[in-house]
Length: 149
Image (cartoon, rainbow, N blue to C red; front, top):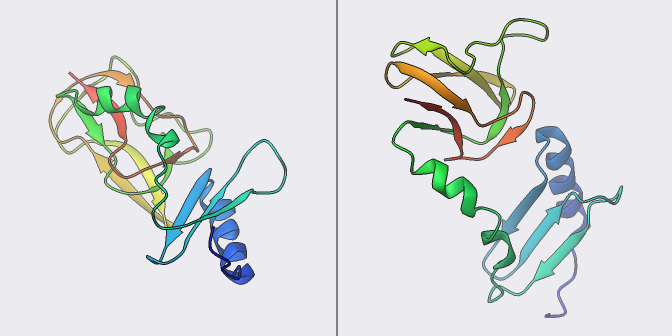
């Protein structure tokens, strides 16, 4: 590892962003410096600083099962990074449940991104066969949210 001074304000800002978004990991890359902040079992977020040539190979293995579902023809993928909500407010019924028949344009769930609630609508009609996300949990861009058969 190069003898690069750590920008503690940047690390604090990234850790704060983890808390705000409920993400478990965030990475910042300038080309000459890469900082990864991840939330683990420990109370403090561990910080890893690596040279640009280092590749995060370990992160690819757990994503294999998600990739299979993302290729499903009925998968509805997340158009953004954010926090998913299955109902309009706490205690309200979910927008859709497994087994429900939905029509094109019907609201399936909400994704909160940058303090804005974005409705995710059905791209086509069909029956909801699986809901792949949990209420109040973070989602990534392209992550499959649910399956419409």
